[in-house]
Length: 398
Image 1 (tube, rainbow, N blue to C red):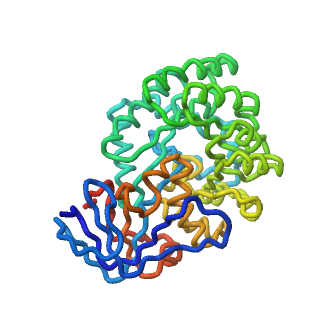
Image 2: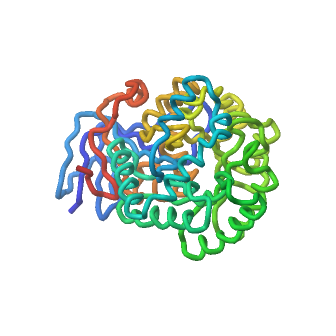
Image 3: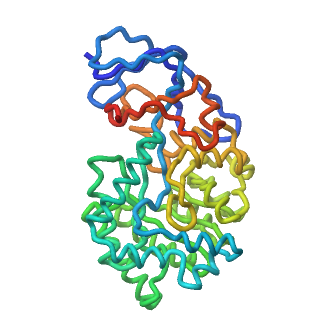
């Protein structure tokens, strides 16, 4: 007996591996069923088996659970005052120089206890889940010292039984003002073995940007992380062309994220290394940045994933479907590129494509039943939650 059978849906499988270019074609299984047992997809087609629960549809679109491959979901406080400063014309870097930006959130996150942080994190993840986000990457980076970076990673790991979360060690998010630059880099390098040995993170990331971490510093940190079995990612070329794309290609980062100002050489190196471009369209919009160079990514065959970059300063948006709507309206991605960017390509950006990101037999039953009979409406209805039902790990979310 099946646990759940979803009947008569129009199933967007997203099968066939990573998606590239603007002319993606989707396989749609029309008026088809999905059988779920023990948390896995075990049947696709027309299912006549009995089930503990039958979800009867009338041609609504069924898609894989959304996957957010780039977030800073764990933080304390907010930065509404900086939002006001931005509206009045100050740039991100100007606000940062005045004591705002990342350090504003660092102060509040350092002051917060683990239980308070855990409560905030759970609330955010529950909200995301109701919008169909069944897997989330979460970075540290608001601690900027050993005690608080480890505290953040421990909190992220504490919720792993409830949510599909993938922790990233981002000690190199900025430099704490109370520390010497080289001393803090040595502290990060010293944290890496502990983070790896305790299994506190899957990935390691660096904010490679002018006035933050240089190419050389990013290389040293990411290579050390890789030597300790942490998969490298990189914040690349967000504010200026800072060499992040080149580092991503050189050391084989699984993803390079932001990519507003990548060099031609860097994109070529990313293509050759198989690095995925994680684009963060709402951040670009919110900071009045120009869009990422989508046409160049298409021309070079670099796959695109979409993330929210959810954080209190540059992207106060936790709902990936809305980020997807910005991907199509602001970045001019096709609807198919956007949906692939939030599902199968995002799975590749987190190295979870063997279990998640598409609706295929044997994969985890992370599934979104939408309100719509035409998948294009997922992106079309701006600001609307496209979800009717969410199934995560074979369990219906109520």
